[in-house]
Length: 299
Ligand code: AMP
Picture: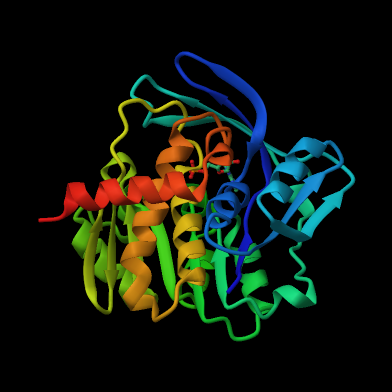
């Protein structure tokens, strides 16, 4: 089954303590779509400007990503720039140029509206909801977010969370949303808003799922060196949704394995700038790391 992914399609300029890389292919939808494409068909919804490099369109195509929902508009592509501290965890945004995103209204081609799996990757919650409104009875809808929307669009975000099956956020966002430092208390409070599946991401410490079947503690794949973690969260949730869409059986039967696959794709994302590493690995590489993670966590 296919997964529909809406989110940002961006040019990312990234600075780490040792390197600087301008205008890489980035955005939450790009990272999530490439990650999901390891497992099955992906339909992407987004917007780029006329300056968007053709080689990036080719890269999407190389991963068989359906681009019927990608709008090309007069103007500039969304440009985001961020800088990492020495620990490669703390990041500050240097620049956000909205460009064509300012007037973006995601319109779904007819063939997209019946996609059973929907990932509302990080963009403004009102846009995420606009996509959800166009869907015909999807089987499983997951939304991701970022601190910006908690700061400037909280009522829209709450409205959206009430309507999704799964909600994914990181630990500091969970604390901001619920006022709770304790992850398990925060999970409980987020369930009260609506979603049956809540996943809290903890960067290099993995993630925790709370679901009707209980908790799952999902490890991150251990890496000795991180080149650029930008998009790791998007890769995690994209890989998870791609895996779920391709798997037979219920969500409950597959979600743990799906998270592990997402976690592994995220590890590849961290090993290169932007999508440089992820776009060079194969499903066989992913399966090898899944096998290792299984060995290292079984007891
Ligand atoms: P992550 O590292 O998982 O938090 O995701 C980083 C990605 O988010 C980058 O590729 C950015 O292009 C994208 N991004 C940054 N700011 C925004 C924003 N305000 N809206 C949507 N996407 C954004």
